[in-house]
Length: 218
Image (tube, rainbow, N blue to C red; front, side, top):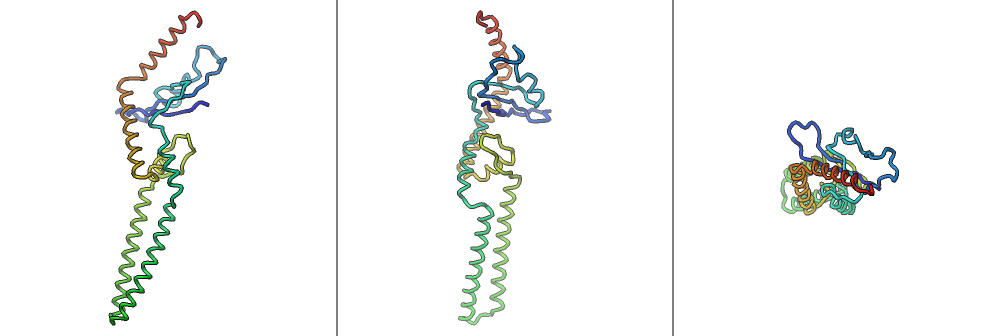
């Protein structure tokens, strides 16, 4: 079954929307087209705002659309506790530490005859500091997760929010690998744009059609 992929192109000054090419691979043309010598994708690029629509019968893999690393990160994250559970576990540990601290301080106060009121103030201030640190950590987690969206189905191009969610769930090593792939894809896309591969492809297709028209078996 045919697949749809987006090949993003570098934006240029004056562009009011993202520039891209729609790539259709594993396409099986109908044996008896409704209108001979016409493309079923004619006019599609103008309708969707694409630079061009390219259709291939073979499989075309675009590195920028490779979601293998993302899916692997999602599977790994599924085996880990959710952020909310981790925060809840952290609060439980903090509460236990506070109780232990209070008990030890009380025992020390009884043994040394210290000022119990001042000792309790120390515990209260320490607990306030721990709560402040916990709240700051929770706020930082929320800031990092801002804009996240639920994961999409396998094989579907993710939205920016879904991409951010997968990025945040990946390990540091996988994020570095993903960043390297993105930079490489950007370089290839820029080179494709500068070399005007789109015009070259159009010219080659036209030459192919002329050759077919001249062939006696055409």
